Length: 169
Image 1 (cartoon, one colour):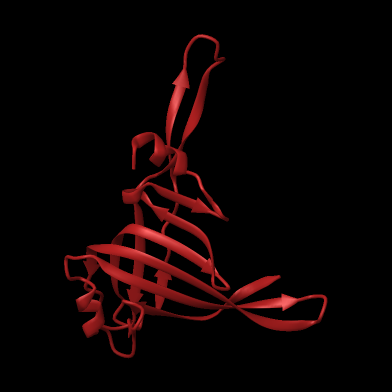
Image 2 (cartoon, rainbow, N blue to C red):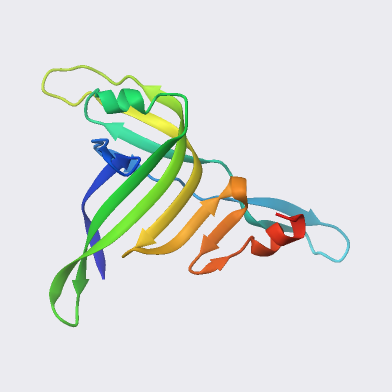
């Protein structure tokens, strides 16, 4: 049974520590089309296979840092989010640590300068357009969303494989 995040670390290019205080992972919102007409009693919302609305990653910094400035460079950034979660094994009666990892390719789209007040965080933050997102649990890839390369992989199945074949990709 999963309980909570023990802690996490964010890296750029899998080696340079970013030092963020909070991360907001992207939402996945499938693209849809409303279908109506003869033979359908009303409207039906059709979910388009493997197609998602744009995704955004949020990074909140406690203070202004060189890394926060570097992440505002208008280019692709490779972000590696590593999370340690606390799980309870109810059969053994023990607490266990599980590994979760998110790999994202992002481009900055906004930076908030934050604030300055005595004895308080600066609340610097950035929003980043996500080009790629893969999730690993205990080292096993469980999800990969890559809109530019027509990949929608979940739990061992690439739902856009046949679409790539149909398009000659």
